Image 1 (cartoon, rainbow, N blue to C red):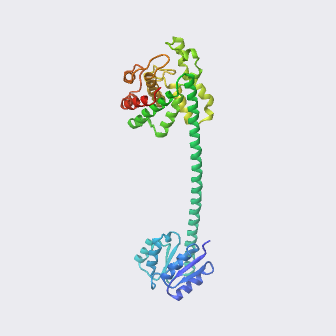
Image 2 (cartoon, one colour):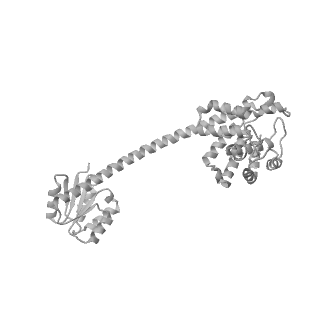
Image 3 (cartoon, rainbow, N blue to C red):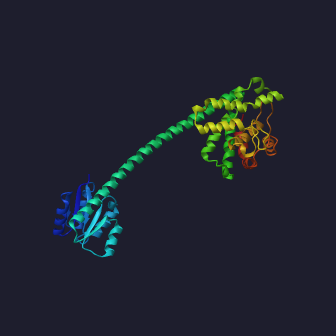
Length: 363
């Protein structure tokens, strides 16, 4: 608790008068000049409620004291009131520019002077108390934020682990290596980053892209429910078999619906979009919902191109691998269905990156 008043004045009578006025409210310390007063302020800075400072004094005047206090920001921590016989407006203005709390002219009314000193001291103590509370609350909020951030990171990692595990199950069921998932994730990231740069209207932030890339692992989760004689058939599927194969999109969504309570809502939403709509086409000739144009979520559009490209350049049980050049031309020319023209423009720009990734992660 700050309960001391420092009176800095070279006149004995002034110090005596002020001490008599203040002594019933505060413990009073006195200094006979600015130099002694400055030293006293520094020694008692933690307990000083206010400083009453004269301007005209030997050794160091009031302005020099204010100057020194300003160098270490003490005027922001201790209220300083000037008590002076100076009646110049410019002098008063100069004092306030230093940051004093009040200017009391001599001769002064003792009751009013005491009230003004008390008000200044209480205001500063209230502000100090408030700042301490804000600082403590800020520190607490900072700790809570860090804890929430740690929990969010753990949840994110958990989401990614769930997705990777499910994706690996699908790969095993599909008699493919886990490299397909790695490549699709890589192609999706390359394409999404370019889409973000070229077409900001899709609002593809770095965080959204990370979720889309992670969720791309689940694009074929529904193949778990496809019988082996269809899923692993080496030749061309019959019309009936193909219709059943197409149901892997909706069957996958049923699986995701069953587990949606165990992961983050945003991951679940994007995974659902990709799983259901990665076979939709821009002209509405895809499946299962025949969505058209921008009705198709951008997440599914990105994964669709990535998945088709990887299927073309790698051998499957039902086909040989195409060359990377042939695969590029097939996608651009619409031989694999119509894609978003903006997406194709991005695909043209990242062709070399796709081909580099295809060579880097071989089947």
